[in-house]
Image 1: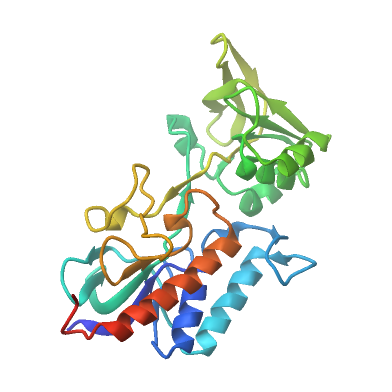
Image 2: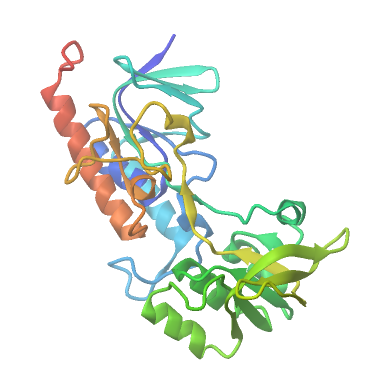
Length: 314
């Protein structure tokens, strides 16, 4: 037997938890699927300095825990694990978690995005042995050694600056001749004596033995020449991919996979399905904008449920 819900929220993080808070306060009694990483990307972020209301900053995991507790206080219920399949072509909507079936009158999608990787074979071979996509998770293990960060945007600068707490030097490897990061982040990185910019370069290979990384082979994007850079760690800071695989063929999305919404609402291409946070935001990708869109999605869902009886969806 399927478990029926008025509103299901898929995904946690600032968007999912804020949507749950607003939906719960509207007496929608939402059920939220937290995914494999409850709290989303902020659970692997150390200090959050730009979320309003915390003048001294707050740890990412702590902020997520506070958001979850606030949503729970008003009646949100939580399911651990990922949604593995959906069918938005029928009413009520069908949502599976492995072999468990849930149905819903409305859905908010807040599945976020995941860090991108280079796609070279040695990258996967050395994951957990010197290659990481999370400086705040693994930086502690690289005390007193040199490391490399791949990327030229804000993500790469944040990773590099954080890693200077532990590493003796952080080499920022970027394929272009200038960084893409915001000016304030560029200035912070360039003023940090532990950060060295390695521009017009890409990593062709990650070097090491059976136990750990010992360096990278760099290739110049200008003349194709190669050289080796001795580092003990390699961190990815090259952006993110929206977590929308389970929704392919169900909802409209752009070429990259971000869900398309009908601005200024959070409505997707299917009536009754809404999207919030990084899963539909290739531009801003901030905790505060994700939380704001989570609020919008909950209000949109509440209005939709109020206007549509389950037997009359059109």
